[in-house]
Amino acid sequence: MQILLVEDDVLLADGLRTALRREGFTVNHVATGSAALATFSTEKPEIVMLDLGLPDMDGLEVLEKLRAGDRELPVLVLTARDTIGDKVSGLDLGADDYLVKPFEMPELLARLRVLERRTTTAQTSTISIGPVVLDTLAHRVSVDGNELELPRREYMLLKALMENPGRILSRESLEKKLYGWGEELASNSIEVHVHHLRKKIRTEFIKTVRGVGYTVSKA
Image (cartoon, rainbow, N blue to C red; front, side, top):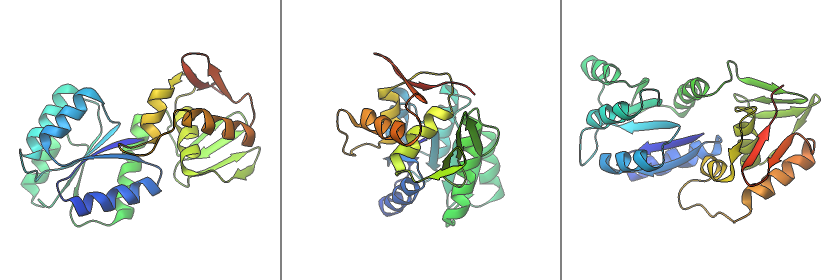
């Protein structure tokens, strides 16, 4: 799940990126509203975490422009503004949730999981396709009842495919889900992850559509 973090506090942003990546999210960070809007126009994220106190423009203005471009994009506001009026303004302009700083990471993660579920076809935390069961809350994968230990990016790749059964996901789209800006990326990274997953699950579970991408069949 790719998150665009819009936050001008560099120390807070670095801490959030580290914590969220440990939880299986891909996080890209910008520090201004204008950078957020430019990114949105060229590389749309799956969730936006938006600070309101930005140096170049009010975060509510950013929110309004994001909503004008996409009414369905999940937006979680993170701000020190804690009055009822501020919360009402943010929610009225289209924020899906509003979290006041300082906050605890478990609460942030719980709210992100709610938004994440809204963006996928999964109605519960458990996705089952054939012999494979993936629990998005526990970050666990089992095959025929036997639990697998997967590295973070193998888990993220499998999760992306299982959340979109029957859809072909291109290598480029998978790279964006797995890697943030500036992260080292080998030319064959996705192919290597797929190869490892096939060895651990079943060769035929992840299908290659030559020249297009990868898919898993619907249950």
